[in-house]
Structure formats: structure tokens, C-alpha cells
Length: 559
Image (cartoon, rainbow, N blue to C red; front, side):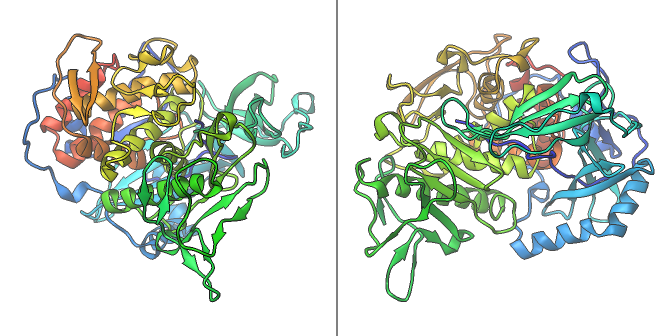
């Protein structure tokens, strides 16, 4: 399955100037200076100081400060926060507070408010009007408006000549959907440089739409970065049994797969095409599908249901109304292409798309696949993890993590919740899951532990590090059986871990994703982000913080 990364420019964030020392220094794993989490509160720093401690069994640890959890906001309340942060004078004041240069400006990407009144504003930057790729940041403010800390994708200052020599300007690609090259600033390397960014359209070899983002150095023509902008992923469903569906009836009592209770979510039939939005599924009866792939409504039932239960999970558990928090639903498209064995999220259409699998007989529409694709949209709307290297692996892991969380929340007697990915769709034809979170290497390619060069193995395989961390955090190490499924999770250092439960683990990951991570976050940064999130939620000296630190150490991501 594929997921869609930042389209055009990575996500936007909010900022505030702080002058205290950075809590991050360069390490042997990465020498370039970037991603600073600046602490201005003693408690925030304390959360990072326990990163090297071993885990103790959590058991019935008392709940931490509930005020640090994300607040449940109506779409209107969320948009009011965005508008306030995005006001021109507010952005200029923040830029001054951050000490940004005269040519730099901020654009708000998203806002998170906690129950205790803390607000986290995520910004993108521009330089001389050019988008800064890898220059995003998050400003964390207390209820009284004072700044707690600032999380940055890079520490490097920007001072580049924006005049680009014509010799290294790439041509527009001939493929349909390609874009004209545009000048940007690439801030994800050692030092920011002027770059050309173009998007190559067309179709990938397997039939997936192509949105290949290419960044090249404007001075030398050297390739700086490449990543895909398309991320691979009452009705009778194929995978979840009989389910309730949100539908809409017109005056003529013709029903359609439009879920008014969940942001107007729509499910369309692509009619085996590969372009456009397809056609809205309608019926004279409000009973859909028959549980077999021969009925075209069946795949639509599964996909519509998957979108609904994923919406419900984020609304009920994390207080988020839709992917962007604005109450607007994404489009779902089924029956894409012929014999297309994949699913994907695309920012371009703000949609999830599903193929019908080999022989058009195994639609990729199970709940975990639907949640996986929808969460790619969430990641794009928040941290904007670039879909390459370790940040791309974290992007994929985030989708797998919340796919598992959604399954456990739904607790279906038909599709039992587990820590496997794609176990029902049989994408390889061998009856085995696509990925295993307890021991990722069981698929033959994924990484169980961090190692030098982990970002070079492909995002679907480096995701194993994040998946393994999450499983260990939630369930602990060793052999066990959950919902009738057997697991055996090893650790890099031979440690024995006790889990804190999937609910707490998911709360920590959600808070880290939406408040702490940036577009260029790698696994060491993710460790810091989750330790900080756990400290905010449960206290800096809590068993949960110790468990987070120990789970990262167990996958060889050390402090």
C-alpha cells in the first residue's frame, strides 16, 4: 500500500522565538544540524532526561495529566484557531519572535489545542517568496501565550541567492499531469540551497498514478531528493460481515453512498478506469452488496465502512473531526483499474483509492487497509513526513500503527483485531499478511531494528522499526496470544518489556505526530518526540515515559 506525502511543499507550522540552548546536539549517526526541540520549561527538559532509563512494568499506572491530551474541537472551533494563527500580524509577530530573517515568512499549516489550553501551531516557511522544503517548525505555547518550546525541522539559517542559472533548469516532463519546474529552497541537507522542484506525472508500471517529486540543486544540477506524492497503501461486506452504512436518500428515495454524519464522505465507482473521480454509487434499495467480489457494491461497502470507522476512531479517541480537523471528509474511490493489486492515498484528489486485486477478485478494501490509506492523509495534514528515507519509513509506520488501533477500536467479531497488516487481502497469494508488527522481518525484507543506512531500504521496509517499537510499547516482548493470534517479539538488546496497552501507546504516537514531528523527522527524532509526548500526557517521571524509552532502545534507537 502506498501513501501520499507532501504535495508541492511540505506541511505548514507556527513559530515563536526562544533563545534557550537546543536540547539536541549532533550525533555520530547524523552530523548535519537540524530538527531542534528547544526547551524553555524545566518539565519539558526533564521528559528528555529519562530517555536512557529502562522500562518497568506499567501495570495499573495512575493516569497522567489529562489536560495534555488533544481537545475535541468542532470544525468551526478548529478553523477559528487556524484563522487566528494565520492572521498577517500574528504571523509577523511570530517571525520576529523566532528571529527569522527579513526575507522569511510563515504560513500556518495546522493547529492543535490541548484540554489544558496549550496550543501547538505548525508552520511552513518561505524565503523571498519561495517555499522552503524541510524548513517547517512547530511552536508550543501555554494557555497564557508564553512559549514552552519550538520544534524545528532544521536549525540552519537561510541565506541563498535566488537567481538560478538556466543551465541546470530541468525541463517539464512530457507525462500527463507533470508540472513546470519551480524554484524552492531545500533545507533538508547540511545547508539550505536553491533548488528546482518538478513533479513527474503519468502512470507507474503497476498502474498507480505517478506524482514523483524531484528536487535538484539549482547551481549544480545534482539530485537532492526524490519522493512519491502518491502513497501505496446496512451492507454486506467482504471482510467485515454485515455492517451499518451512512447513506443519503434523495426525494425520489434513491439512496447514495454519502455519509452526512461524517463530513459528507462519498464513495465512487471508478468503473475500472484510472482517471477522474468515477461515479457516485447509488441504489433503489438501502441494502448494499452481497459479500462477494462479483457484486460491485461489495467493495464499496467495505471501503465506505472502513472510512466511517476510521473517522469514528479519530473523533471518539483523539477528538479530531476528519483528516484535517475541519470536518470535511475525503473521497473514496473503488474499482480502480483492472487486476490492480494496490491501494493509495493522494493529496491531489484528497482521496483513498482501491484496486480489486488479482483477477479483480480480492479488493484491497479491508478495514486495516482503509485506515492505513486514510492515515496517510492525516500525516500529510500534520507532520508532513517526507516520503523518503527514515521520515518516509515513519510515514508508513504511522499508517500501520493507526490501522491496528482502528481495528482494536472496532473490535469486529468477523475481522479480529491484530498487529498484522493486510492479512485479509492476500496480496501475495500465499494467505499471509503483508507486514508483521511484532517481528517485521518475518516478511523477508522489513527491518526489526535501526541500523546505519536504514533510510535506504525503502519506506515500506524501514517502517518495520517504527512498527516494532509500537508493538513493544503496546504489548511488550516475547511470546503471547492476542485475540487468538500468536506473537513472538524479540528485542535488540535482549531486554524483556511489559507493554502499556494499545490505547496509551496510540495516544502517545498521535500526540507526537500532531505536535512534535516535522517533515524531516527521523527515528532518533521520533524517540525524542514520543518521550516528550509521553511526558506531557503522563508526567516526566512516569512509567509510560520509561516504557517509551525502553521500547526505542529495544529496536536500537538510542538517546
